[in-house]
Image (tube, rainbow over all chains, first blue to last red; front, side):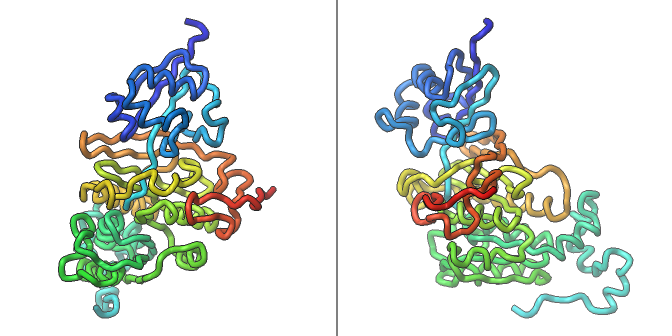
Length: 95
Length: 293
């Protein structure tokens, strides 16, 4: 299995509800964009609607890679490596 | 409500051997005094501490009540709203008799009924980029109990600029998220979320609802973090985001790292002055801001 990238994805809030799981492992995704595609393929349209508005990633999707926002890396082009942990959550501002 | 009650000279004399606590104080705080992490020294620290709560709403209510009960010496309540009937399902520091009152004043009355030893400062102003540094100045710890992105980013940026530790939290429906920020010793809120989502993209509690106990749980956690910070006990929720799912009754957490490129707390911070940020919509750093160093 040398060379296969396995990434752990933790889903929160609406993403968890749409996927029906809180955690999953995705293999073979080279970057964040392909990871999201793999997640949609795995969990279906409800998750796609929560992640994307048409082709565009929704503004309410926050993605951390190993604790760091991918916005401050290379966004959707951020590369993944074996053992990475990705957290996907929406911002909440109520008080 | 009168002036905060001071121990009489004779009470002080009797108990001067136990961190200057009066007999009443020893009884009032007995359940936490016997915790080795608190003790007389920790209680003394709490009584000499100042905590500002921004927003006397769903988060701020339980936070204020528990901090007052624990004997934090001075509590500031910053809120410009008045108590509305729709608040009472979750904002437990207010009551039916306080409808129409300024929230800061209503909170002060409840705090002083609970613990007259606490001094309460009311600030009936809405936090903005013009007054934030003045309002936040001098507090040992800040509780972000606000209910909107601009105020959350403003509290973050101002606290990072002035090195004031704070507890962030947000709630919606059955969900709560919280993290503790010790500026420059861990990540900040902008390391978690760089900018605010567009208006309307994330529903408010008014639009989508919130179970009252969710801010209750999160506000109690925020007060816990404040107390731990003030007495120097345990491990703070720094570099971790705690996520509460009330519907399935689960707590999860994920790691958060300080980002060297963070506009607020990064190695070359873009935000050196609150006027550099447009808090109107995205809480975005204005184009002409430049990193230093």
